[in-house]
Image 1 (spheres, each protein chain N blue to C red):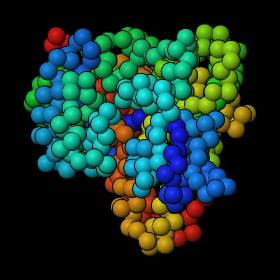
Image 2 (image 1 turned 135 degrees about the vertical axis):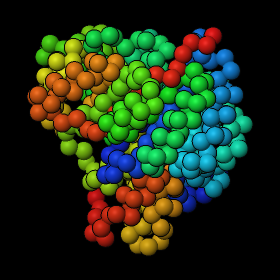
Image 3 (image 1 turned 120 degrees about the horizontal axis):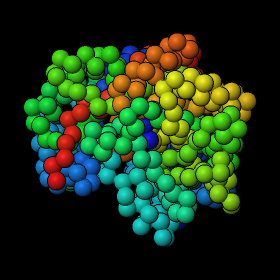
Length: 206
Length: 230
């Protein structure tokens, strides 16, 4: 699934997803140690989420447990809320030269420029042609649902959290993190979800 | 998915199910509608139940071993028809499976939000075939060689499904138009993406621009850092 692509975040500059992984029979041996080393190096950049589909994300699981369970088969998914952090994360990946596949999802032209500046040869690209047809959601709910490409976020949960934010029962960031707990893989962006929740009008709703 | 009798009826789980499969019985206990449940495991993974009342059905555990096996368990029931897409941008720098001069267009039905049946997938696949396209279903779901789901499974509910077409870049605008016509007629929605090597994607973007089809600014980019080490 293209779970990091069709993301309907109003400010695209707040949503970068980096993935690092090995492939069986090609570069898998020793990949776990490389993934762990990379994760420890990018942590100071302040990713807003990261995880490994097999073990969960920092929105739900202690980061120590995620690190402890990284194996050669793990897929590392990391979300940054700004371009500069994403650029530094790519720089670190280039410096480490682990030989693992790295994809970065975000504004294409910016990533293309970044790759050119770093002397990286882009291998392949997946572009987003958007969603055709009318979904039954307004822009806030649709935006939050789109942050989980595995579609584990319930529209009912979003509705409940929207109500709580509007009623002042929880702040948008807390509500976003609660929704993000259902994310298994680490691609959910709680920062972007919090912005969507905080930006809704009092009269918004479905 | 089952709910054990320890359920206290607190209803905390109700909003978490992505497909409204959890309901309250007349005895004020939570229960799961198996027809709606996709065994995604959200009710267990989030620890939302204060008494851990949710439990996997006997026999499901083996299917849930793999990372997203849980999510795809309904698909895995259909082992005879399972086929995974060969094309993946995430690792193409080491697998090299994407074609040199063609691109892979994916139609992800009812995404975001999700929830549809193979009947609807089959209808769209058949329609695309009637329009002269050659769709395949990817991502561990049905291989729809005949433009329809296998016998006996059209009502199987799934989260989403990819219809995949391998095309020349210049064919993409017409394929988008046909997909748009189908979803408009059936009240569905579809998220569309196109994967390919950089040169082929540049050609695709030019073709789309020429046809007036909007391309979102965000893309997934394989940075070419992978290499064979084993």
